[in-house]
Length: 405
Image 1: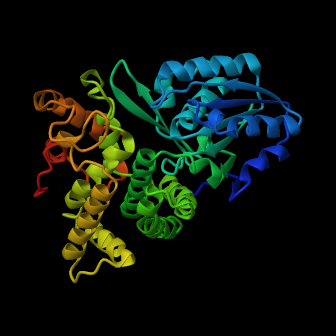
Image 2: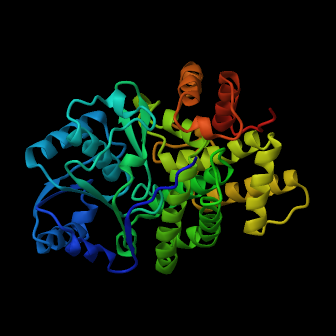
Image 3: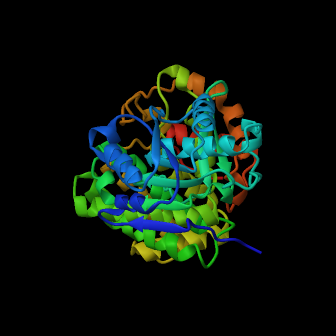
């Protein structure tokens, strides 16, 4: 038996934020990241709508990009003091992911972070509060997913929390919030969404319910992402919808080793001066993983079907796979995303010598590969790699060399 789970309600389109006026409850805690939601007036609007609904509102602000375990624990403590019956998270993937983990700890104060990370092992939530997610970026789709990514900086590892219990009760997808994204963020989150769709379509857990969502979102991203990156606001609105559809697909079909590798490399070189931003990591690794997975005949047919749906041409499955890889690499170029770790600068832009030194990469390669194999996303990848194959694949992602194994 399989399961397909989405939020109970999804409000979308211009003005969707006003749905907060209809919420029933006494207290809402509103979790946000940096200053962009406040600067652009959306935070005040959200607070106003919740108060109009008759609720007392408390803010938990300053959730960092790639939220830490420590931030989760501080937020949960704030919730325990305030006792909200609504947890409302607003912003990009980071504040929403952090708020999901805070919500777990709020409902179960004795649970440990390690226990939260047991795949599909979260006890029943909604004993104290329901959850609303309001997305401002067009990529993570965490507003509709059963996932949260939290970083343990003491280990330099991003850990996925995966359970249908943390699928939000309400998602709000208002394009006005996405209009404020800087170009770089539009690029990275957009390629994150493309990776979600492609991995969901070839996942070992894909099904008839997820395939249409994955394919349609791929086509929308193909048509709209580059235009959105260059400031076309109609395309920006379409991308906000496309990434949400991609989230519906991968939350139920799961992901693959592109995400396993991105999770385990993202903070692995923080002591070198920067992170590998999640969406950029996915963009760099996706073509290499397609080449690796396509050695499996069934996966190759799925990738070929994607190429057909995108209208890329080609005769054989292998030719179609190569055309898909070439198209994704071209998108990276158009979005000013590097093709490999070696050329990934500290500002995330392409450069001749990236911020991750070769010797440091090689020293940490084995441990990263072991952690990537153990990541929650690896089990649904269509081709299961060994540790040695994962090391070789990561090297291809560092040097931008051909995947021939």
